[in-house]
Image (cartoon, rainbow, N blue to C red):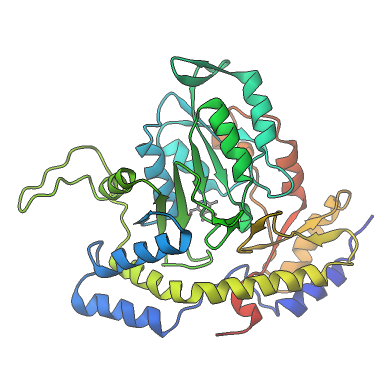
Length: 387
Ligand SMILES: *Cc1c(COP(=O)(O)O)cnc(C)c1O
């Protein structure tokens, strides 16, 4: 079985005329005017009206009670894991099929990532497989869950909404309830994605968004912590601003904390981008439909649709090589990139990277299989026309 690489590349070039990067940001006068107003008024750092405005708009859009904005998605995740009291001596169950930031954030706290496998529908972590695995390898004592072989506490499960497709949150919450551990949602790729009618980032004890340059909307660099709990939101804002105790003139701080809060300049860009988000989501659905139609009858490759009962933001469109066509992968990537199509592979499984190679892991057959078959293709909204 061989892939008709020429036909695939030609089809891609019709949808995404080269040069077509994987994902490109666009800005307009709204962003520019708000940034200029920050400069004119001198509110450039994390105090400023756009920080609050962006948080309120995000919380409303995501249907969560609170959003606390940060300098990056990585910082949001780091602060989340730190706030949960997770660190040295703990393990966090986390996908091997994810961007490195999810796992770095765990490692920063001194905790050890414990890699779990993906499933084929959403490409998120596999709740059923995790439950069966935990029955085998874990035990509950003193009110916590422990890994029987390493002796470390299993402190949380992190899921990630891969490429914008919502993970199976009902099933993941059920596993967390059964084993008595909290869920962390890395929703960095999921702004505008809905699981059974509810925006992602709503089910985690705490959840993270990212506004890096290649995400669906961007603030240059940025992220957010989402939650539905007033005290957690207060703590998130304090821990990302050096945990300073409010006082008219004394500098005093009540715990070791971070300088992770988003500056007003970046939040101004975010407020402008929020105006574009609904339009972006609409165009991304149209682009996904275009890919789906164009690849419907090319042998050996198909477009990945959103999971059942979910609305995906289609942040990055995925083409999946059918089993048996993996050998054409490298030749395809070479040909596509030579033609100016920014096609990219999925992340090398994090469990294979040297710094995480000794971490505990379950069988990762599906992760490896998906890595060999996933092709990410250009997904900028303006491929469906400028505003
Ligand atoms: C983008 C991203 C992050 C956060 O990245 P930053 O660049 O730090 O904003 C975290 N996890 C995933 C899965 C991501 O795609």
